[in-house]
Amino acid sequence: MASSSASSDNHGQYLSETSSRSLTNTVTVAHNFEITNFWELDGMGIGEYICSSTFNADGYDWNIRFFPKSMPGKKQHLPLDDGRFTIRCVLTVMTHHTQDVSSVAVPQSNLHNQLVEMMKDEESTDVTFSVGDQLFHAHRCMLAVRSPVFKAELFCDMEENATRHIKIDDMEPAIFGALLRFIYTDDFPGGCGVDKDAPLQHLFVAADRYGLDRLSAMCEGKLCQSIDVHIVASTLALAEQHHCMKLKNACLGFVSSQGVLAQIRETEDFRHLILSCPAILDEIIDKAAVATGRVVKRARRS
Image (cartoon, rainbow, N blue to C red):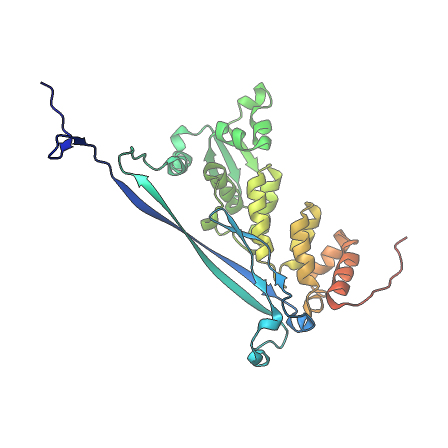
């Protein structure tokens, strides 16, 4: 007579036993919404607001809405001499789901770490790059599948197939190293010292040069968030040369803020911007006029 491992009650009926568990996932993001013209918002009515750009957290879209008329009466005591302040929103999204514990646990993917280790393993590489005083080892197949420019450079004909060493003269070693790390990981190379100012600009140029669109977009987003009086002119020139409208508009919006143009117009970067992109001056004037509510009349360019 066959036997069963299932439990039974007093009536001889066998009961199946199952289990489940509740799991919670937490995602936290931060968004900074800068108000640059607070005193000019005084004419807005009750219920009217200005809105930040949309940001994503755990697959949901969010934005910050600022209602100037809803601020308490003590607002005149805020340190807003220049009408500028930043609203920082730190948002945590918690989601819950139930898991059947009888399901097979699948190990988390380790491909990311394995590719990093492959990048460090010089024995398996088949091409080297000389950049400045440093040598970088890589795998031609990895470079080709990630970058159409590298593919053309490394596999365009039989002669190129024999290429084992390439010299790059117009790039800093740190920038090329960061570029390689992105190629192998698909993540922004944040620990390579290229996440702000001039190095970030150079990485953006390198990403555009090698057709790495995802890295280009990452750099553009970070440049939009790090604009200040020291780099806005050079960043605007970069945006104009590489046809990046979001970055260009962010720079124009910052330059048209109260007092910013006066701070940068005598700098070497601003003079270079006007010489290399003369039409941009009209756009700066138009943007500043819209920001201040003034009408600017000027002669047309011949």
